[in-house]
Length: 159
Length: 405
Image 1 (cartoon, rainbow over the protein chains, first blue to last red):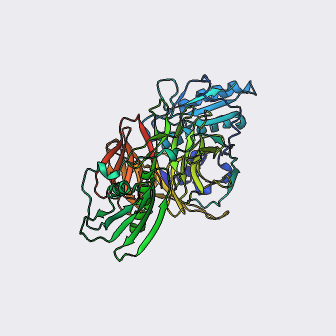
Image 2: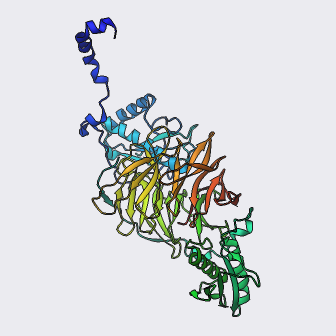
Image 3: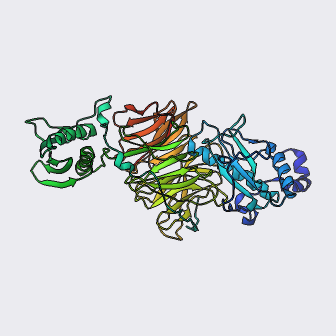
């Protein structure tokens, strides 16, 4: 250990304490209430599907790499902007549709696309949007949205 | 590790029945013998020898000849010639296409006698052939078995059904926007599939004999990958109505569903162990899908164990348990292409049986063959000889085959 550290050990420890907030807590020490609450989806009645209606995307499609489903920094801005828009319209509802690239095995692609859509929904909920105003669907690679990539989540406004 | 108790999540209300596609099984006739397209010789060492005895009646001669083709095509027997000794003898009568068949052992003891009264001679002889095979070998025959699959040949992905030789292909669904992810009930009387007719993915059940159809899931979110339990009373599937994609087991009698997985990723493709006590499925929690085994709780409130099953491959999906429960087939990746692999359960080395883009394996009811797709073409692969042959070529892009269990 460097001589500086051994000599000033108590001060080094004190200096490190403020940065502890950034250190992830081991899972077994976490309080269950710290976990994100997952809200069940509301009834699908009255929701329009992009397969039946020519729904227009409410924002640019959110692009995902290969079979990734975690949200990236690039997704944050369009989600935030849309959440802000929705604050002014309490009746606004969003259908979040996940898609997956054609090369993936079909069932896996469906599950990936569903997980992507649910991850976007969860972010909207964290930003204060009413869960009942958000519906999701995963189309896998059974259908492709219009656009250059099919590895996306497309958000459709319902009204 | 999942130690959660079984919890009944929701009563899934069945949709009112609607009439559709009456009597598809009634249309399935004209079997194309599996052995007629065989490309390699079979190991004949342990095959029992069977004699085709006399068949009386007006259609007796036709029945005798057709039965010979069925038995030879089954590759379960050596058909004894005149003067040769045989361990078994089949005989009977056929009048107007109806068949009464008997099976005797070498001592002349009657093992069974049964009458078959389906509308066609071929159907009756297929049923008789499967009964003979089951009585002698203890394994189900393939003469009456069916394969469901998806094809886009109509312009939309729809569910089709064919016999084990790739013949007698019929379109099962005509859904607006298509239907995918099919599976057959153990007796092949029902097909479960995901329908897009409402614009959202919903699992539906179609009775192939009666033509009745009903919804299994009337829940929001997505529902895919249905798989019948070995007794046909339950359906495992991926559903996401709780706001998280999970594997659920639905009781088809009560329309209730229980969550059996505990996923933070993307679970898919459940498949039952033949005893119905465990389910294998794929789950991607990051870095590609892996295989997981979960014990199915047998009672309400019973805890279940969930654990990862290591295959030696990083990317594993579409698992299916073999009919004897001793192996699991799955899709993996080899040198950047899809490949079908088999690994013994619970342990042993995985081996790739077909690379070069093969995917979505499904076992034949006797466990000797595997069907899969490769670049949109449907194949059947003989695990004893290692040979394979194309079942369907040029039938649109075929995907997601499932053999009757």
